[in-house]
Image (cartoon, rainbow, N blue to C red; front, top):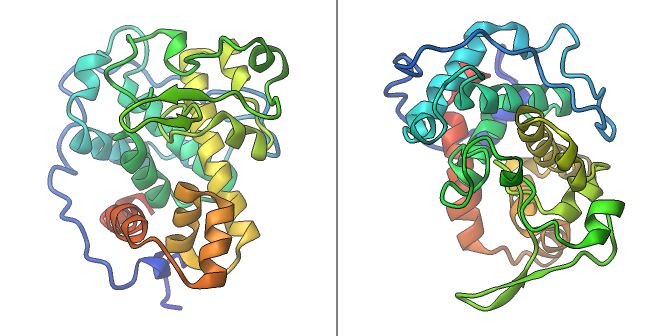
Amino acid sequence: MARGIPPWALALAGLALVASAGAGASASSAPRPSPAPAPSPGDGGGGSGNGGDSGGPLEKPDLLERLIARINEANRELLRVYPCRSTPCMDEVVARAILEASKQTGVPPPVLAATVRRESSFWPTGDPKRWPAWNYDYLVSRFEDQRVKNEGCPSPWPMQLVTNPPRMYGLAIGPMQVKPAAFCDVGLRANKLLELRYDQGIYYAVLAGAKYLAMLRQRFPGIGWRGWLYGYKEGPGALKAAMQSGQWRQDILSGYCDRILTWAAGYPELA
């Protein structure tokens, strides 16, 4: 292993680096309020549950600012839809959520940031067209089913019918587009979002996705980030079947996994 190269970077070998244009530009022209304290949503399902413990990446303002710059480089609309006012700017909230979830789960910041970018282009709601700013419902859509509100992890999970094409589809929440059942898989409860501030909710939703990636790393050791991202997209069952049969969906590998890894390779300043 080359000296100074983090272990996760070996998974990126052979992928082209993305140009880092704009990385040094200012993250926002709007005045930025003082940084908010790290969110502490509590129920961490295996993590410390406290985003304020010492020694983590949130104590490195330069890393935070570099990630904010990358977020604005990828999504210039974020601050227009979620303007900075008395609360922290939304790019900073998302950046802090990514860094804190990385610290708690061990998922490298470049990989986690690139996954958030691929899943939602850093939109805190996962869908910029459906949710008004600063509304709690942006992370908890369609929790009408009383079992979801009261139990958090009902079995089976209620599904919703969507069209174009018609299919039954589970709810997906937040910047990493995590299904409520996946929250349960990593010891979290999606209905806890009903109790949290917006910044805590964003962190909690990102933490769920990061924990899911960490779970795949533990369950399928040694296959590398390309395989773990495949499992994040398709599920552990599909990943196991692909490994056993050697039949991998090439559209997922190239259009999803390789895209994330290429973006991650272009974020060396986040490592």
